[in-house]
Length: 288
Image (cartoon, rainbow, N blue to C red; front, side):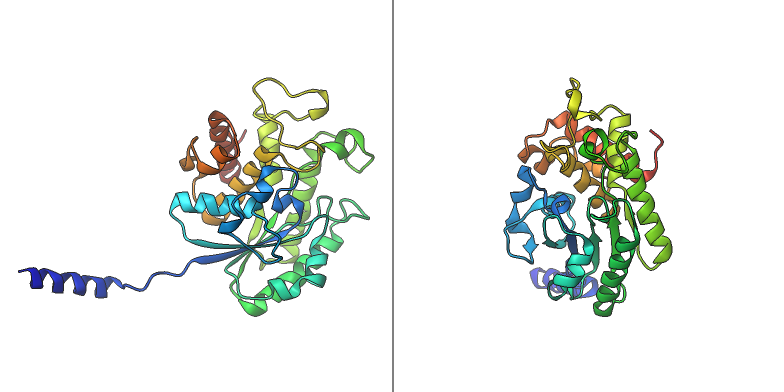
């Protein structure tokens, strides 16, 4: 009888297939907004991702990997990042690192798109196209997503810029519009990831305080860090949730208030849940 059961089990394994499915690969290309500058996110779990520049970065990619582990999803996560650089730099200086086969690639550009002409999408569109063409030669089916980043408080409230004096949501809206324009020019790209719009939603729903220069309201969080430019741990956490939800289709609310990365970063469990809800609402188009 035991031999019969063993034969049956082996036959079932052969029928279902015993070869493990290979992990999907994802590459993050960007700058400090991806590697988590000025926050504990930067050095978070660097051992679970592959830093192609060998700088010991964890960053948003490590948050993505941590979410994937908890969701039971198998992803091989890599990153190629450099501070203060735009996508043109990565194409010009880092082709050797990124020119290989990937299933998914996340592209995050300079915070103002063009350092010399803030808000001008021309350089952005060109760089995205060059990188996309490079990646498609290695894998014609690669899925390429563009990150639409957040409004900078310093450029809205203090420093002269095209967004000075405008509503805090304006810069993120302009960056999203630039990515929408890029997608019209390059319909082969998969889409844009609405990180900046998720930040806007967090302000509208009073989860986060929109003006760090007049103090942070009780019960709300600051999505920026001390320079009012880069994100805080909470800001990067929200970014990672939106990226993860968009790429995988996983409902990030299922991660729960006790999600590991949120706990490791010292975020209040209740706020972890609220950020997950914000991310999911933005991804599913729920009106705030």
